[in-house]
Image (tube, rainbow, N blue to C red; front, side, top):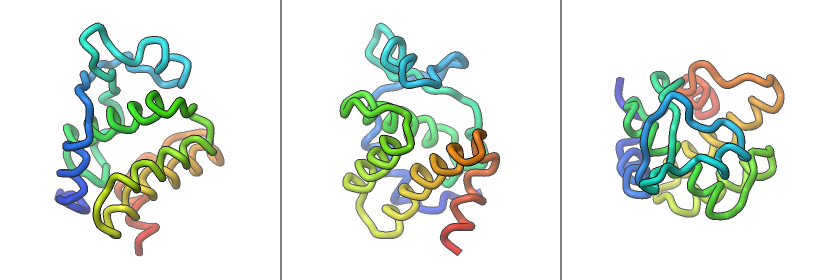
Length: 134
């Protein structure tokens, strides 16, 4: 499987802070603030749901998660829908390319909206984003 944009993958890896993949990564904003960064300054990210993504590479997905969580921490933005939409806009500001900006916004903002409506995560993130594009 190929990524939807090699350029987006490259940009994500460039923006990602140091991270470590752990099974007990935080999944609430309170936990992210409390133990989201390990003693070596790495963002703790989860390995779950990293197969069917727009990045087509687990390592890029982990890098994205680290970057995403670092924005929550840097700008003191919770996991509320309104704050997730702000984080989506922050991602867009740092990404080059209209297609890439659209991909990152859909991946963040629309999946957040989906979660708030359905109270579950999108199972196939790649297909979800492609449905918005097509």
